[in-house]
Amino acid sequence: VNSLKEAEEKGQKRRKANFMWRFKRNKLAVVGLGIVAVCIFIAIFANFLAPTSYDVGNLVEARQPPSWSHIFGTDAVGRDYLSRMLYATRTSIIVALGVQIITLSIGISLGTLGGYLGGWVDQIVVRIIEIATGIPALLIAMFIMGLLGHSMWNVIFALGISGWVVETRITRGQFLAFKEREFVIAAQAIGASRFRVAFRHIFPNVVPILAVLLAFQVPAVIFNEAGL
View 1 (tube, one colour):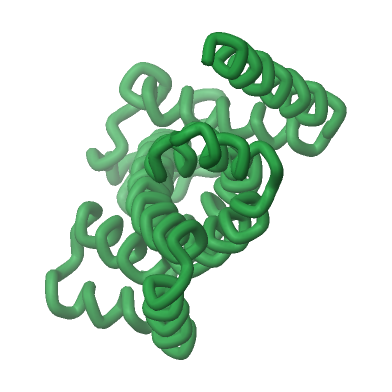
View 2 (cartoon, one colour):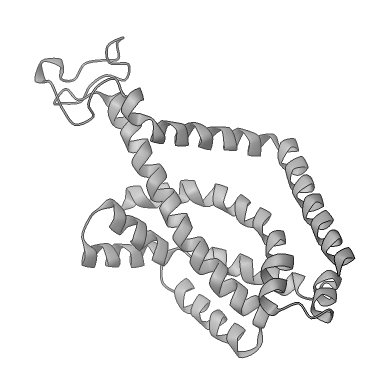
C-alpha cells in the first residue's frame, strides 16, 4: 500500500512537471497567460488605476480627443474613456470567470457521471447533451435574461446555464478514454472506491485539457456577454 501511495505521488509530480514543461514551451500560451494576468490585475485595481470616475461627466470636456489629461479622450457627456474601459474590464473578467465556474461545475459533474459510470447513466447524459446542442446557447441565454431582467449576475447565470455542453463532452470523452487504462484498472483491483479512482487517478489527467479550454472559452464568454 505504501509503495502504491509513493507511486501515486511520483505520478502526480511527473504529470505536473510535464504540464509545466509543455506550457513553458508554448509561446502563445505564455503570452495568453500574460494577457489574462494583466486583465485580472486591471480588474482588481481598477479603482486605483482609473484617472477619473467612470460615470461622472463634465460637459466642458465633452468629445475631447486623446490628450495627456484624457489618454483615450472623452465621450459626449465628458466621461473619460480610459476610466470606463478599466471598469468595463473588471465587469468582463467577473462575468467570464463566473460563467466558467458554472459551466465547469455542470460539465465536470455530468461528464464524470456519464464517462465513468457508463451504461444507462451515460445514455441519459448523452441525451441531455443532444437536446442542449439542438438549441442555440445564446438563444437560451436571451430567454433567461428576458425572464430575470438585466444585471451582471443574471448574465453570469444565463450564460453559465446555457454554455456547459463543450465542457461536458470533453470531460466525458476523457473519462471514457482513461477508465480503461492500466493504472485505473490497477487502482480498482486493490479496492479503491469509485470516487477515489475518478478524482484521484483520472481527473488530474483531464485538468490540463480543461485549462486549455478555459483559455478559449473566456474570450468567447466576453463576446456573448456583449451580445446580451
